[in-house]
Every structure is written in C-alpha cells, then in structure tokens.
Image (tube, rainbow, N blue to C red; front, side, top):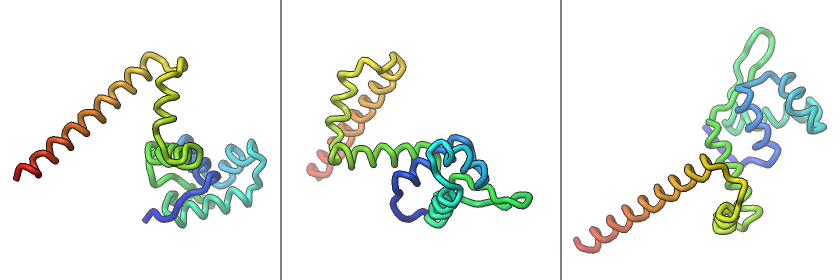
Length: 138
C-alpha cells in the first residue's frame, strides 16, 4: 500500500530507480549517491523510507536485496510536476502553460503532442458540459 508524501530526495531517488529498473543498495549508492555527495547510509535510509511507504519493493537476491519501483514512471513524473506546481507556482497551472506558449524550445513533436493534449482537455470539458446540461434537463 502506498502512503505518505514524498520529499525531494525521495522523489529524485525514486526517479533514478525507475530509470535504471531497480538496484541494490550498493549500486544506488554508487550511481545516485556518489554524484550527489550522499553517503551509503543516507541512500539506504531513503530507500527504506520509500519501501515502507510502498513506493519500492525489495527482492532478496544472492546475498543482497534488490529494490525496484512499485509505481510506474508516469506516476513518479506526475509527482515531480505536481511538487513543482505547488511549490514554485503556488498551485497554478497558468504560468506553466504560458511558459510553453512562449517557449521556442519545444520540438515539432512536443508541440504536436501538447496540441493533442489540449484537444483532449477541450473534449473532456465539452463532455462534462453535456452531462451537466442533461442533469439540469431531467
């Protein structure tokens, strides 16, 4: 069962583990901890917190445990994005959307995907409006 919010370090380690597909403590300490100046004990502590919260599962291998994500990458990235929106943009999506509308960094493929997402949102809101109208007609 997944419970509890995640701190920045937990989210980043979870993201790392989702990218590498799972890891022993030693591998995570080397690949994630060393570049960030974190000790092995810090990495172990964070991995165990994530496991107790239900974000990681631990499998016993040959003398070591391997930790892997119990949530998919989209859910992890969603958490990172939500944290950014809440902390940096005070919960508002408008500055985020405005940035993308002015950004010259979007590739053609990214722009196309963004337009498809907007069309999906517009379709969902129209469908919701249709349902609301049917409710008031009844």
